[in-house]
Amino acid sequence: MYENKKNMQIGGVEIATKHENNPASELAHKQEQMIKVIAREKTLIDIMSFSVDTLDIKEIIKSIITKAGKLFKADRCFFVEYDADSNENHPLREYEEYLSLKNIRSHLTRPTTKEDVEAFLRVTRQKKASFIEDVNKIDLPEASRKMLVDDLSVKSYATLPVFHGNIMYGTLVLHYVNDFMQFTKDDMEVAQAIANQSAVVFHHAKLYQKLQSQADREKLLREIVSAISSTLDFNEIRQMLVSKLGCALNSDISILYIRDTKTEKFLPVDEYSLHLSSNKMPSPLGLNIIEDYEWSKYIKHNKKPDITYSDIEDLKKDYKLHGTKAEEFLDKYNIKSMLAIPIIHAGTFLGFLVLNFVKERKNFTNDDINLAKIVANQAGTTLYQSKLYFEAQSASQAKSEFIANMSHEIRTPLNIIIGFSDLLSKSEVDSKKQVKYLQNINNSGKHLLNLTNDIINISKIESGNFTLDYEKIDMELLIMDVINSIKLISGNKKMSADLAPACIFADKKILTQILYNLLNNAIKFTSDHGEIKIKSVLEKDKLMVSIEDDGIGIDSKDLSLIFDKFKQVDSSVGRPQQGAGLGLAIAKKLVELLDGVIQVESTKGKGSHFWFVLPKAEKKSNVI
Ligand code: ADP
Image 1 (cartoon, helix red, strand yellow):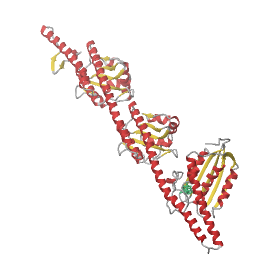
Image 2: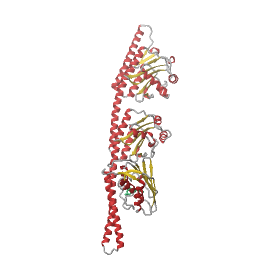
Image 3: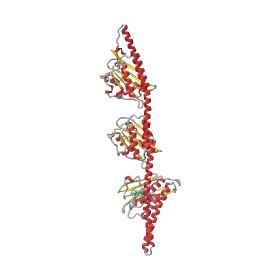
Image 4: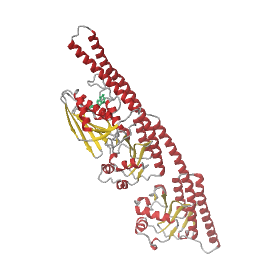
C-alpha cells in the first residue's frame, strides 16, 4: 500500500520506500516490511488496550481515527456513529474526524445532508467493508458522487462498518484526496482487523456507558421522587415536578396540566405548572390548550400510557389538530418534539405532564420514556396525597367556620325564644302582643328545627343510611306545590314558572327537598323586587329543571366551592342571610342519589342560574 507514496513515517522515523536491486536495498525493504507489520500490530494492540485504558467513547473514536488515518496514510479519516435508538447515523461531530494536513477540506465544513446520512446508513447496513481505488470508475448515486468528488475531492476511499455480533456501531471511513490509493490484500485484512477490534472496544465502552447512564438515571429518579415526596404543598410539588423532569430530559417548555376532578376541566397554565429552559423561551402562562387536544380525551378513555412524538407533524396528523388552537400553539411556540404522560392515581385521571422540545428535535430513548413514566406514576400518588391533605385542611377550616356560624344561627332564634317567652310571662302583655310574641317564638322554633333537619339529613346521606322510595311523579304538579308552599316567604319577589308536562320515577320527598333548597336560596339571595324563573324541559329520557334569579350572584372563583358542606361565599357572622351552608351540599348529594347532575352558572351582581338533570328512570330499587 505504501508503494505509491514516496515516503512513509512510522513512529516518527522516516524511511525510504524505493529500493534498488541490491542486497542493501533488499535488506532495507525487508526492514521496512517488518516495521510495517510492527506498526500494524502496535495499532491493533493500541486499539485493544482502549478497553482497559479508557471507556470514554469520544476519546476512543478520536484515537481510532487518528491511528487508522496515520497507519493507512489517509488524508481524511472519520467515524460515522450509528444510533440504535433512532435507527439513524449521527451527523458527524468534530472529534470524529482526522485530517492529515491542515489544507485538507474538513467534512464538517459542508452541511450534512439527509442523503449523506442515508448513504452512510446504507454502507453501515451492508456490513461489508469496501475499498475503492478510483472513485471515477464506480457507479455511485448522484448525491454520493456530489459529496465525494465535488465537495470532498475524494480519489480513493475505504468504508469499514464496525460491528459486534449483530450490533451496529457505525462506519470507519478513509478518504484519499491527494493521490489514488491501491489497497493491497494485506491492507484490507488489517483494516478489517482494526474495524473488528474497534467494535470490541465500542461494545465494552457502550456497555459501560449504558450502566453508567442507568446509574445516573437511578440517582436522578431518586432525587426527583424524594424532592416531590418531601412536601405536601400542592404548588411546591407541581413546581418541582416540572422543573426537575424538564431539566433531566432537557425539555424547553415543560407543563403540568392539572385536571379539576370536580369540573373535569384542565386548569390553565400557572407559574407552578410551568418550567422553561431559559428566559428566552416564550411563556404559555395563562393558556389552556390541553382542552383542544383530541388526545386528552383519547387518553382519558383509553388510558394509553404515554405519547411521544419526535416529529410534531405526526402528532398533528394523528390527533387531527389541523385548525385547532393546539396546532396554533405548537406552531407559534415552534415545538418540534413532544412527550406527554398522563398522571393517573388509582384509576383517577389527575392530569398531564407535557414536555415540549423547541431548540431541536428530540429522539426519545426508552430510558427517557421510562424515567418520565416512573416520575409521573410517583407524582400521581404524591399529588393525590397532597390533595387529600389540602381537602382535610380546608374541611377543618370549614368546620371551624361552621361552628362559629352555627353558634350564631342557633343563638339568634334561641335568644328570640327566651326573650319573647320572658316577655310573655309578664302579666301586663296585651293579647295582641301575645299573638305577635308567640308568632316570633314559633318562627324561631321552626328555624331551629330546619337547621337540625339539615344537619341530620347530611349525616344520613353521608353515612349511606338513606332509603329511597321510588314512585311515579307528575313533575309539573310537584314543582307547583313547592312554589306555592315557598311563596309564603318570598315577599314581593316575582316568581314565574314555565313547566313541561312530565312524569318521572323518583323519590318525591327527595325531589321536594332539592327544589325547596334551590328555591329557598333564590329567594334568600334576591333583592325585594327581584325575579325568579322556574323552568322544566323534557329531553328524550332526561328531565331538566332550572331555577334562575337576578339576585346578588356568585363570584366565579367561589363557584366550585358552594356545593361543599358548610361553604358560604360570605360566612361572616354579620351577613344578612340566614343559613348554615348545607342547602346546596344536600341538594347536590340528593341529585346524585337520583343519578342526576346539578350545575350552576352565575355572574356576581347579576344573578344565578342553578339547574339539575334527572333520568326519567322507569323502575328503581328502593334501597341504596
Ligand atoms: P346557605 O345555607 O348558606 O344558603 P347553601 O349551601 O344553600 O348554604 O349555599 C351556599 C352558599 O352559596 C350561600 O351561602 C351563598 O353564598 C351561595 N348561594 C347559593 N345560592 C345562591 C343564589 N341563588 N344566589 C347567590 N348566592 C347563592
